[in-house]
Image (cartoon, rainbow, N blue to C red; front, side):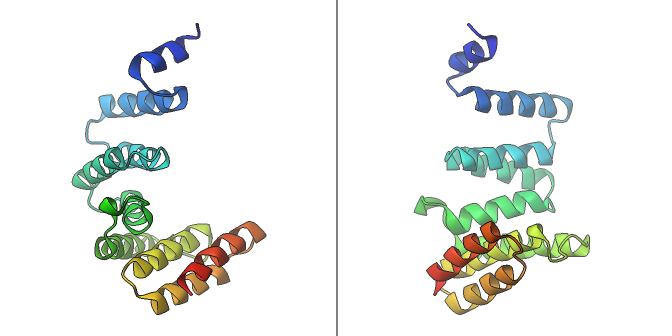
Length: 164
């Protein structure tokens, strides 16, 4: 049997998750307080729909680096769009995404590209979670204006339609 599949079976995860876990373990063995490693692992768990593991890793990333924009963005997205209502927190999502945008803007990284659009979409979702649909529509419209591909425009249009 393939050693990767054997290790994955032993740990009770799929092979891709095992590769991610092993990479995370290597990074944190070198630096147990590696906020980026914890943030990335949190993002992975969001994708795997293990929201408890996701929030645990993201919160740990923010404990080690309160200004980690990726971790703030991941937590804001989780808090504003999670299908499990136990993890939804519109006010927390809005605080997180606003802080992350402030950090990214100060570093000159919000310049009308895909990242800027992503931040606006998450901010729109946070406002929608709070029932502030007029602001959500304005944010989504701004994100739509930054969309240059048909795929990006379609994604934002679907979100915009939900807010309307």
